[in-house]
Length: 351
Image 1 (tube, rainbow, N blue to C red):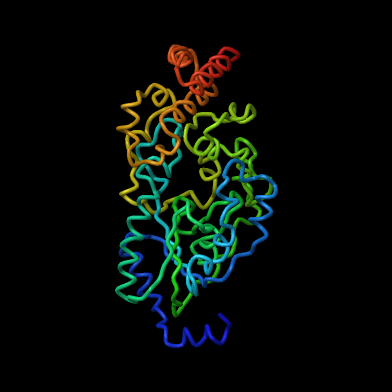
Image 2: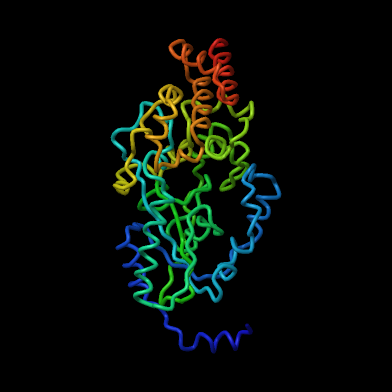
């Protein structure tokens, strides 16, 4: 459609009131809400990141690139990107002695939380504009949530590649909804506020940041403990420490994540599996895992993947008290678990 035809098509289309859109999003349970014009993102950062191999085994990142960068590729005549955040908080009072599970994963799977609320939000927005067309996604869809969050003013992309809000730090998850309607007021892009600070870069156990704001998944513990279903590289294994699923090292030291931050959404509160240590996770039966992991992000790596991670973690942190468990698991019928347990036993023996 040429510009003049597009202009005529939109001449009688209603512009949505931004306060009503924001109020609807907050009423549906989104604590962070931002609005950005649906203009294409810069192609170069994503293409360069992929070309350097930083996506590791995330093959989906090589697909649907036009849709990732241009909202109009998924919603014709897209006008607005509504960016939404749900905090999970840092102030959990019952955290495990060591951070086996990253904070975002200790409670209900954030994908479900966002999808449930976006369904309600779509209904609310269609009460404002019945003809509204939308595209909603959380994490696994064709969108660059972090780039849009910065453009919509929710926060800025820090040197650790995460979106940081002045009100919530980086302890929140993101989703977005593309609308085929304009709003009467948009948020300004958030300025980057890291300055000279490099605490997150220095805290990374595997030096996974080749440059500020750029994450090399091939070295990232979050990638390897959540997405990597194959063998963990030899150079990564000893760096796991107590971590079994995810890694918060770069978040724990961020100055914006300190102090008295708002609590997390109560529906994201930690569940029993999120409090277990690496040894307790390694000892779980499959029935126990199925019961404890239902509705949590840890279903993603599955029972054997989580046990594999736990054994590798014990290779970094375990001692004599863990050897009996590891010897039993070294004979496990699942080869990845048996290999990880055998490796852990060798690591413990060398200390």
